[in-house]
Length: 269
Image (cartoon, rainbow, N blue to C red; front, side, top):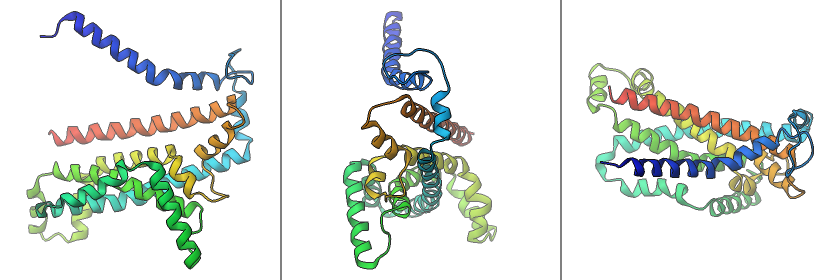
């Protein structure tokens, strides 16, 4: 039985870790409301820097690129990753451990290695065929490649939680593959699909390294813009951009967590 003193120590350790993780983010958000152009002295609350954001065409263009990139790549990744997850489930008896290892590789591979390899491939392909010069298209393809493994593993785990006899029952009722997918498979794994989409969206919005190596001159995203801007010094305007990104990622993470919990509660019924 855990002693009260140990419980208090663990609680204190938990709060210290939370403070270590989130205090830097809180400071960024606080100074985004600073009325003066300073990252060291806070004078008073103001929306001055947020108002300047809406009038900055370059920031708005970068925001648009980030949203388009995140949405398109996430949709494509969910479709392909779900099919891959279903394939892993459908043929799980064939000892496809090697395939799961290949799926894991993009997850554990360093981003800089992944980004450089994608850049080299696209540049070489563009020089040979004239296709896929660096830009939003190459960024979408690159983001899809590292999003798919996450989606596939989420979908695969959801399929494992389903009753295998339900698939046979759908076949016995003479449901076509399309009808099985529409009326049984998709509704059964919908929470996992929504969770996978928002996880992919979060990963895309947050990515810098892979986007940096595959972007073109007219396809800068918010992380790339921030990286270029902070070389001149961190300003409250940069803090405001970072705060909006923190809010977007937090909202996506909360929605993803909500659907993950919904998936777990449905599976336990």
